[in-house]
Length: 272
Ligand code: ATR
Image 1 (cartoon, rainbow, N blue to C red):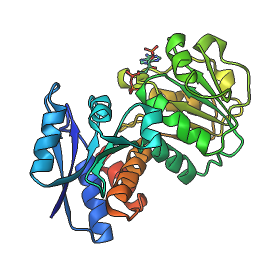
Image 2 (image 1 turned 135 degrees about the horizontal axis):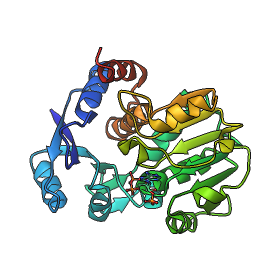
Image 3 (image 1 turned 60 degrees about the vertical axis):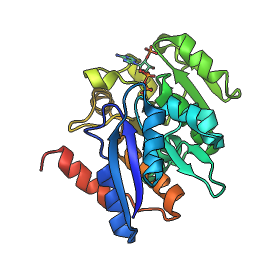
C-alpha cells in the first residue's frame, strides 16, 4: 500500500492522518497515512528513512517547513514564494519536489465561504510564515490590494518587499483607512487568547473576519469581529482541510470534497 505521512514536532495532535484517511476512503484510494515525530535536528534523516521504507509523499508542519524547503531538489513557484514547503513528493524523474498548499488552501476556503476575491482590498494581520505563504495566492486570485500589518513593522516591510506595489506594509497604529472587505488574522495571538490590537474602524466594511487558527471556541479575534457586527467570522479549520485536499490532489490526482470531513472535525472539536 502507498505510504504517506505528516512530519512535525510535536505531532501527537495532528489531524492530518484522520483527514487523509477520510479523503482516501471517500475516493476509494488505497493508502496508509501516518504521523511521524521527527527529532528537532533530524528532519532530513527522518524523511530519508521514510522514503527508504517505501514512503511516497509527505506533509510537513511546525517546525520543519523551512527544513523541507532546504531538502527539496525542486521547488514549485508557490513554495519559492512562501519560502516554505508543506507538501513533499517524488516526481516522475525521481526528484524530491517541494510544494506549498497553505495559501491555495486559504483561497479555496475563502471561496467556499462565499467571498469573491476579485478586486477587493484585504487587510492581513501578522508577518510570520503563515502570512507570507498567503500573499501570493491571494494576489493570484485577483485581489486589488493587500495591506500587511504587523506588530513589528520591519517584518511586514521585509515580506512586502518581495511583492509588487499591490502589497503595502504598516504597523497596527497606522493602518490606512480603506474599505477592507476581508480581514485575515495570520498572527499567533489567538494561541494565548489574544487578538492583534487594531482599531475597530477597519472592520466597518468587512464581510468576513477570518482567523487562520482554530479551536473548540471562536478565537478572540472572531469574537471581537462578531461584537463589531462583521456579518461572518470563520476559523482556520477549513483552511487546514483545504490545504490537505490540495496535497492529496498532488499525490493522487483526485481532489477530495472537504465538506463531510469538516463537519466531523467540527463535531469532534466541540466535544459532541
Ligand atoms: P507563523 O509561522 O505561524 O506565522 P511566526 O513566524 O512565529 O508564526 O509569527 C507569529 C506572528 O504572530 C507574528 O506576526 C507576530 O508578531 P511580531 O512579528 O510582532 O512578533 C504575531 N503575534 C504573536 N503574538 C501576537 C500578539 N499577542 N499580538 C499581535 N501579534 C502577535
